[in-house]
Amino acid sequence: MGQVVKSIKGVHDVLPEDVHLWHFLEGVVRDVMASYGYLEIRTPILEKSELFHRSIGDVTDIVEKEMYSFEDRNGDHISLRPENTASCVRAAIQHGLLTNQQMHRLWYLGPQFRRENPQRGRYRQFWQVGAEVYGIGGPYIESELILLSAKLWQKLGLAEHVKLQINSLGSSDDRDRYRNVLVEYLNDNASELDEDSKRRLKTNPLRVLDTKNPAMSNVVGAAPSVLDHLCDESREHFEGLQASLKKCGVPFEINTRLVRGLDYYSHTVFEWVTDQLGAQGTVCAGGRYDGLTEQLGANPTPGVGWALGVERLLALITDTGHAPEAPAPDVYLVLAGDEAIISGMALAEEIRLAAPEWRVVTNCAGAGMKSQFKRADKSGAAVALVIGEGEMSDGTVGVKLLREQTQQQTVSRAQLMSVLRGILT
Ligand code: ATP
Ligand code: MG
Image: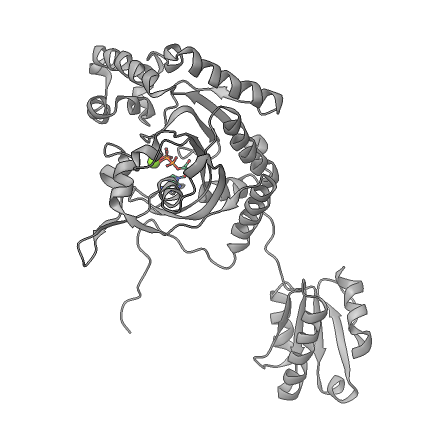
C-alpha cells in the first residue's frame, strides 16, 4: 500500500453527517429567493483571468495574490473564480440580459477559490450565496436586497446575532474628491501606517480604511469621513435607503470606514457582521456597482448585489445552537435470509410508493437478527419492520418501535400502511 492521498490545504469535504446543515441553508435560500422573485443563475467555475483583472481590479488582494490561475494548453489565461459577481455580469452581457433597459433579479450558490491563509472562517475553497440585480438604480432596490438578506437571518434563527452596517461611497466624482482628501490626511500621518497601507496609499488609498491591522485603528478612526464629501444627490440616495430600512424595521449602523475591498463599488456599501466568529466576523457583504458593466465592455447599467459566506454562516448557526438535527430513517427493514430480503425489498418499494416522504432503509446485507437490530437502532430509525421465517410463512410483518420500550407486534400486510401512518404521522 502506498501513502494515503489527502485533500489540499484550505479546502474541505462536507461529510454525510453534516450535509443536512447545508441542505437546511440551501432550502431556506431557495424559498426566500423565490418569495422575492429572484431567479437562480449558474455560471462556470472557470473564467478567463481577464474577467477578474478588469472587474475586481489589479490592486486588490484577490487579483494581486489570491487567484488560482493557469495557462491552458492553447495559451489562454484561465482562473478559478474568486467570486461570482463578475461572472454574473459577464453572463448577463453575453446573453443580452442587459439590453433595452431590462431588469433582472438573480441569485447564485457555488464554490469560490482564493489562495488565502487558511483559518477558521477563511478557506481556499469556500461557498457563497449571492443576489444580484441589474437595471435598477436608486436606493430602494438596495433596501430590497438588504431586506432579503434580513429575511434569511430570520429564517435561519440568526436575526439577533448579526448587525447591519451601511455606508455610502457616493458617485465616482464624490469618490475622487474624497480620495484626494484622504490621501492628504494619510500622507500627513504616514509614520503611523503599516507597510501594506503605505503601498495601498499609492495604489488604492480607500482600501487603507479596510485594514484588518488593529495597530492602525487610531489613524483610520480619525480619518476624514466619506459622508462629508457626498454631493446632494448622493446624500439623498443614501437618505432614501435609510428611510426605507427604517420603515421596514431593519436596524442599521452607519460605519464610515466601510469601503469594501473591491474596486467596483459606488454609492451604498454594506456588511452584516457578527461578534461571535472572532476575526472572521463579516458574514455577508455587498453594494452598488454601477460602473462594472462598462468596465466589462457593455453599456452602463445599474447593478447592485451581495454575497454571503456559507461556511461562516453555518458556523454561526452551529455556534448559536440553531442547527437542525440530522434526519434519521423512518423505517428500517430487518430481514432474515435471502427469501425475506427479496420479499422485504419489494415491500420497501410499496412503502416508498405509498409514502414518498418517508426514509425507508432495508438491511439487504444479511447478518443475524441481533446485529441487524443493532444496525437498525444505530441508524436512528423510528420503526423496524421485521420479516423472519414466521412472518415469511404467514405473510405478516413484525413492527417494533425502536425509540420506545414496547413489544413487537405482528400485523398483516394489508394493515401495515395504516399502522405505520399511525406511528409516523
Ligand atoms: P474578508 O474581509 O473577510 O476577507 P471579503 O471582503 O474578502 O471578506 P467578499 O469578497 O465580500 O469578502 O465575500 C463575501 C463574503 O464571503 C464574506 O463576507 C465572507 O463571509 C465570505 N468569504 C470571503 N472570503 C472567504 C474565505 N476565504 N473563506 C470563507 N469565506 C469567505
Ligand atoms: Mg478577503
